[in-house]
Amino acid sequence: MLVSRMHHFAFQRAGVSAFLAIPGLAILSMACAGVPLQAQAANPSSTANPYFGSITAHPATDETVKLSLDDAVRRGFATNLGLKEAENGEKSIKGQKNEALQEFLPTITVSGDTGFYQHNLAALGFGPGVIGKFLAFFPGGQIPAGLSYITKDDMTEGQIHFDEMLFSGPVIAGWKAAGAAEKAAYFSKMQARGEVVQQVATAYLHAIAASSEVDNAKALEQADQVLLSQAHAEHEAGTASNLDELRARVQLQAQQQALISAQNSLEKDLILLKREIGIDPGQKIALTDPAPYSELASQTPEELRAVAYQNRQDYQTLRNQLTEYKAVHAAYRSQRLPTLSFSGNYGVTQVSGSGSHGTFVAQGTLQVPIFREAKLRGDVEAAQAQLNAVNAQLEDLRGRIDQQVRSALLDVDATAKLVEVARSNVELASRALSDETDRVAAGVDDNLPLVTAQATLASAESSLVESLYQYNVSKLALARSAGVLEQQYRVYLGR
Image (cartoon, rainbow, N blue to C red; front, side, top):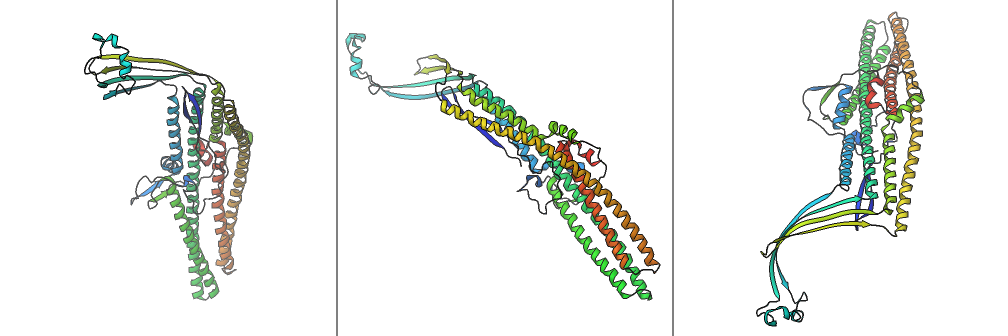
């Protein structure tokens, strides 16, 4: 599951405590990433897994929407809830990186104010005693008559302020961490796209399998209807017993039940597919792609593992997260370095109509940490622990990739053999049914062996449908374990 978290660390800047938020998107891959999905859950929920949800793009219409696998994947990219969350997460990280960029850029602000002021000179320390010391400066050596200790003035001023950090080790390291976090967010989004392909393609293939079950059930129902008509005619002619007719009728009704169940499963699978790709559940759709089947080119675990190390998004995410934690660790260590900043302002002030004059300040600040050893060591040790944890996760992921690739190859090989066996069973069951039909027509057997042969064929065809589905899903899982699902799902499915 995709989990995003923020790493915040505090730094001293120009004597003021400031927080620099370093965005780091931690990707905790789904435990089933690269592992074959055996079947859809009965009632998947977007609450537990956002990839089962979507944004409905358009209301339902009376038209039937024709939907290929490629169309379904494109719609999934446009509307899938899990992918939207990953894309929004990437945008959030980019926004926070821009915030970190501001630490490097000068900050320029303009301010202005005007006001009317009244001052009490005596309260400010300019009482009669103080003014008396300056009598020599007044004409006649006396305080002017009417001198008030309450003065009034109005003042208008405007200023432009400039602030810039010239050097700060934590800011530099924080910028590197922000860059690594942005890359991690990108690979998180790409991993989400792969998840969408797997979820949508699996749902599409499951619906195809359900549609094949419906077709098989309809064909068997028609065959059972013919068998019942023949048994009824023979019973009426006195050449067959009533038991044969009853047996044929039971077989037909059982097949009708199977057809109803298959049709219900198909409708629910279509609703699930529409839910994942943003189509209104009430919209009618028609799947245009048949069940794909093709043999996969032989690949060794070593070849696939090398491809996975280059293309697995979760692996690349963790590598960038490792870079991020290294930068965070460096940021904490660099708190021992001095910081240098510059600030200044220039303004114009006018008081009580006496004319205007300019004011300015230009100030450089050098801040050198003297003793904060306990805090600095604690920060560095905590960052080192996080770095060690990510290193361990990366090493574990390398081993897990090897395991997933090998397991996926075994699943592909096993399901391919199951398809071969299932096809052979269908051929044998078809021949057995044909032979038994001839024996019944010749009057050698009653219809009990014929009903049994039909049930055997139905089971063989259902097994073939399931085997084809499992084979295609295992190939999707193999492509996912190699990290090339989005780019090569058509190749792996033989389309």
